[in-house]
Structure formats: structure tokens, C-alpha cells
Image (cartoon, rainbow, N blue to C red; front, top):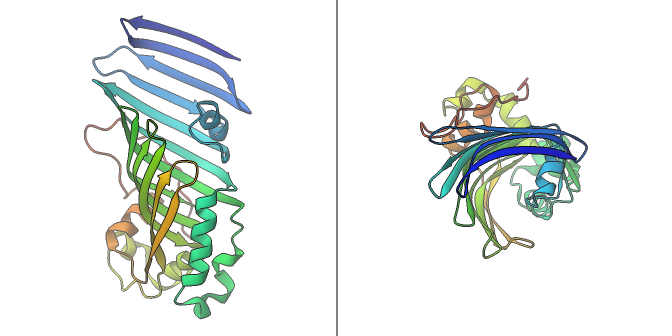
Length: 258
């Protein structure tokens, strides 16, 4: 069950305190009065929380921390989830399949081919999403997900009124990670240097009906330094940390790049 207490002024909630259990773990949320009230949310079962609020139902587990700032007609926030699994996500299955078929360097990475990835259960070390919600839409920006098997950047919109999705970004399978770290110093990556020889990825777009979006890809043999900083910068905190008007950055647990 959930215990919820709040103070409302007109149609706006000014103060809130929530404790309870959602999914397989506890959840806490709080909001304190301010000119721009900020909601803080924590849970040890991110998948359970996202399913409970009917946002996403293919995540299992995950340590969730979120901060959402409320303004006039909009909410700006950051969502961080660590150590979770995506179960039977169709979009990942399509991207992994495309990576297998399109890899221009597959002979060089026989031991690290993405066909070793089980797309029905893909583990992730971390996810960081920066978003703005307004008028029935959520806009994602400068968002990344990474793990031992895949990494990706993402931006775009989720339109709940029209039940449409339009997301795009870069998808990098595991064999590119392995090649990257053996050939290029990590510092060089984060600074945008190096030759990026052998690094392979896909530019992707998910668009259409939210329940069954169309996946289109553009093969990349060289990935732009900005994308590298965005995805790999989370390793040491040099990646995106939010604009000045974003909520206070939250703690981000990143994998050891060794």
C-alpha cells in the first residue's frame, strides 16, 4: 500500500509526502513548498514504478532516483535508473538484428559479435534521462543508456495525446565498446580525440504508434566525438549534467571502464 499526504492550493499541489510499496520494493516521494516546487522520488524497483504509472512495462528491477521541477504549464526533470533489465523490448531486438547484419568489421570481432546479445533480456548498468513534460507530451534530451552489452543516446518526444513516439539517437553494440577500449585511450574519447578506427554503431529513429513504432537505421562506421562524450562521459562525470535551469543533478553510478 501507499500512504500519501499533500497540501493543495487551488488546482496545484504545493507540498507532498509519499511512502509505501510499489512493485517489489519501497518508494518514497516528497515535495516542499517553493516558487517552483520540486518533487523528489526514489525506489528500488524502477520497473514496478514505471509500470504502476503506466509509462513503461518492459523494465525489471532498477534503482530509481528522479527530480522533477514544476513550473507554469510544464515540468522539467531528470530520471536516473541503475542496474536494470529490459525484457522482450522489440526495438532493441530490431537494433541488435540490424547491427549483426550491417557490421562492416564483423570479421575483426568474432568473439564480441552482437549475436551473443540476448535481445529478450538485455541488462543495463545505467540510464539517465533529462525531460520536459507539457501539454500531454514528454520531450527527452541529452539522454543515455549503457551496459556491458549495448550503449545508446536518445532524444525526441513521446506524445501521449496522439499515442505517438518519435525518438532518435545512436546505438552502439558491445563489440564496438571492446574495440574502442583496446585501441583508444579513454581520455582521448572523452576529449573527442583519437581516430575511432573500427568503432561501429547505428543512427536510429523510432517513430509511429507508441505500441509498435517503426525502426529505421543509418549505419555509422565513424561516430561523432559529441556522441562519444555523451555516452562515454558518464563513466567519469564529464557527460551532460544539465542546463542551468534543470533540477539539481542527481548521483549517477557509472560502470568501471576497465
